[in-house]
Amino acid sequence: MIRIAVPNKGRLRDPTLSLLGRVGLSLPTTPNDRGLVLDAGGGRYRVLAVNARDVPEYVAKGAADCAITGTDLLAEAGGGLTVALTLNFGKARLELAVPEGSGARDAGDLPSGTRVATSYPNLTREFFRARRQEVVLVPVSGAVEAAPGMGIADAIADLVETGATMRSNALRPIATLFSSSAAVVVGGSLAPDVQGEVDELVLALQSVSRAERCRYLMANVPREALSELSALLPGVSGPTILNLLGRDDWVAVHAVVEADGVNGIVAVLKKRGATGILISPLERMVL
Image (cartoon, rainbow, N blue to C red; front, side, top):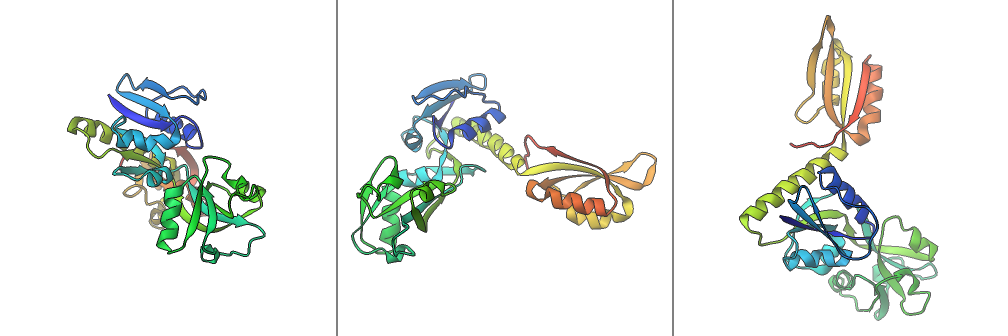
């Protein structure tokens, strides 16, 4: 049985459960702030839903074989965990911010002794240590944006996705300390049989993650336009070309394309006379 640690709440929880569901590990989605132990995949997997900040520790201490967590929490915790797969969600930044009225325009403008409130003391300390700047860290566990207004800090270092919360608290970012995304992390000393099972799970998660960024495209194309359109539709290792029954001057083209380029590709296909264009999502893609 493979043990997987996941956050039981927070910004990564729902997309994590959704991802696991797409590889056959369906789990309850009812919010619960307490730790949960859930079996999935016909008993092959045990999912440990725990506090987000504890996820790396569960893997580091051997309570879980692998986990889905943010690379910000992984870097903050430190330790010998391996990032086996970077995922398509959970993108955020650890931003250094000051009140709107501050004259600081970048991190170098902060004077010695500046009080910086943060729930990421290790990453923040490392950032300023590398710059040889002396600051006073003010560790807080929540509502970091409120610290300057309450008079307990002159600046903050906090994780943001859009920055809306900072702006609503009249704060202005002046530096990015760390860029984060969700990732699959693995412990450093797994038994060979467990490692094999974990590798299988990572491959499944990778196939779903890769498929999210792609679409399957099918179109009927004039044969005379084929050479030009083949470069437009590279596919995984090249487009698949099929003859149309009874139409020597037409072919069917099948290809996997990047999702963010579909609209442009369809426009070019139409200009070159293509018809019957179909776009379908992919569930998994294994290279």
